[in-house]
Image (cartoon, rainbow, N blue to C red; front, side, top):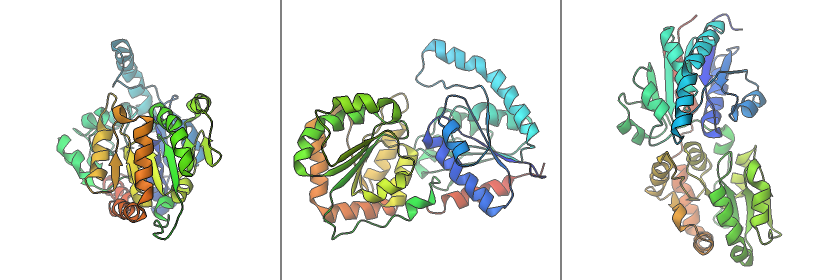
Length: 359
């Protein structure tokens, strides 16, 4: 363990929370060699796979979310807070935390409130255009706040520094679309866990799109691979179905057009890669994806389709229309690239170092 104590990152649930945390962790280690960076998550999230795989220690506390749950589950989540708070205090003392960073998700609440009770400086980062419940609450007492999109500050009591959202450096290394290329490649994915709505729509549209000769890589999510394959009348020979894309930047570099959700991490990766997209924002309990999609659409960097309009005919028509005009496709990619924040991880690390206290 570092003599000065650890940098602690609370991140859990989906890749949208964990991947920016990992990008920040790598940057902290790059700037301060030998620093210990520890993640805190829960037993249910994707952090159990991604964090150890990236070479960082992961500690677990008891916590669960409130949004979109039944009253019974909300009460259950509330009942876990005291235990999660005490577990977090013990962990922060164990690692002599010098800064605690929350990058979104319900696990941030017990960890950062524990940090406050111990007098440890805290930083929160909000990736979405509309802040989540956890960050809205934590923003009230966080030492510093950072946001991925300036639009988020309108919803926060204490406006944050606009840093962008950290993404893996490989996305920035993707070459721009070649105006002279004749490829017609589409990457389809619904975030780290997949999207049943998108899976069903593209499976139905395959019958129409197969006739156009396009190539498709379709990431279904691990839990929906078998069901999605069954929904296809048949998988076209130049289409590939996969459950998960651990090196998404490779497939994004391959693609001419991306069909996907509009999570904060996804739109940041699209910008870093300079890839045009058709965004289908999730419209469940949290509507932040609608605003994320709007931010790209208003800059001419993406098209947007609402879930209610996602018929086989509409989707096939939208994809075909985008691919037939290479000049417009390239322009969309350039506009997406103009929104990228290549120094997001560095800028966020600077904020961390500005508030740290040696323990």
